[in-house]
Length: 163
Image (cartoon, rainbow, N blue to C red; front, side, top):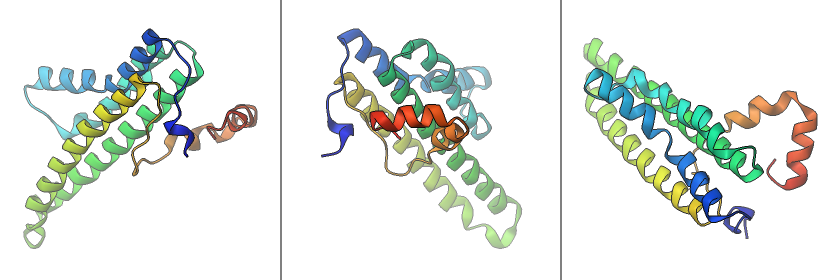
């Protein structure tokens, strides 16, 4: 059995904060919609700010809180990257006549990405509420690549099984 499905230690309030870490990307997304009046793909990278900035306050230095924060940041960075790629596909389809078929395909993929983003965020928050870890299957491990520079941190995390 994967260690992600094992219940992690923590109090009820700590688990609620861990669940909130997964929902923090909704704040920058809602702020972008409130400022410009509609959703915009250029605002996709802003969803990473939720787990990075607000997640730091919610995790409060707890190891399991940091794990949830890393997973939420990786997931939202992957979604932002996918949204920017889809934006490029839509731009190409709108500007090049021969690539016009890319517009409906890009819109369909964008709608599926948006639904997947909401669904995976809800699943991750629900799992965190019960003390479990969750990682969607298509996440790019950005935080793992960024941590490669500090061997002490990697050795410490590998000893806990999150490496």
